[in-house]
Amino acid sequence: FLTSFCEMVWPKLSGAVQKLMDERVQEALKVAILKLPESMRGEVHYNISFGDSAPIIKDVYSWRKHPCVKDGIEVCGKMHWDAKVDMQLAIGPLNFGIDRILIDGVGCIIFRPLMDQAPILGGFHLFYCSPPKLRVGLTGLGGITRWAAVDDKVSEIMAEAFKMVMVLPQRMTQRFANTKIEDMPDFRCPPPVGVLQVKVLGARNLPGVDLGFGGRTSDPYCTVTVGGRTLRTSSCSRTLKPDWSQDPALVFLVYHERQDLKLQIFDENVLRQDIQLAELPRRIRSVADLAAKCGEARWLELATNDSGHGGNGEAEGSAIHLCAIFC
Image (cartoon, rainbow, N blue to C red):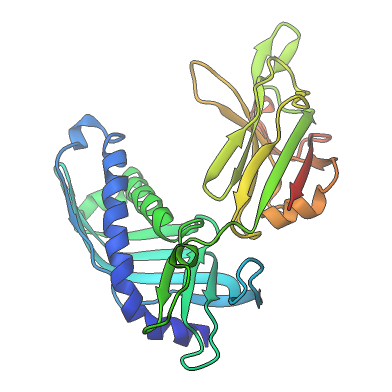
């Protein structure tokens, strides 16, 4: 049913997607062009056209009455979009095209408002909870398509543009026929479903990546990312047992409890790139996962990047102390 529904309404929605993607790609290109080598910079020209392939939900994870919308039903699952596109770009001396964009992630369709008469469904929302995995198919570059740097840069541009269109809090919305929407701003941008407060208290037994007089040490700080927003703690100098108990809680607006959550600890450096020391294991993937485990302060095991000892894996006793409240 969901696949058939998306295919039915996509001709109406694809034009809006094309217009928004056109605007967002332009914004993303302006930022990306500054990161390219001098030899590749120059005038940027492009055109974009989406085909008729609609997103589909391959596996349904849940369906429910929406918690913050009184007249809406939400279906959530693994959303796959194999978009056939016709996009041509010219970046300085390079001319190439994109003929395919593959997008996979956790997505939702919300049907709202629900009406007492035909057509029953007054409209819908379509979005990904967090930035999805995105791959692009390049054409017209000959041997240069084998350059990983070019592939990565184009994928980065498209991922950033797509995030501005269909990743929470952004979403695609469409009303049907002459459906009356009493509060159009609320229809297009519903309020968040809650607030997540993460209080990072400390960590222990972190890898040491800097050389000190007493052996290996680090200058750790912790970052928490929800959706596209990242916040961090202060840095603690020369310690493998940082104390962040005096730092304020990290506060996030949450638009769906299945939004990805990522917690990482880095070693701060001045003259080189910061080094990742550890992160929460992938079994804790979302806001809901963390809130279920850490309603009260507790220690969670970390997966470490043990650069200081030449290996990757679980370091015995490496853990983070935190509390997470979702309300």
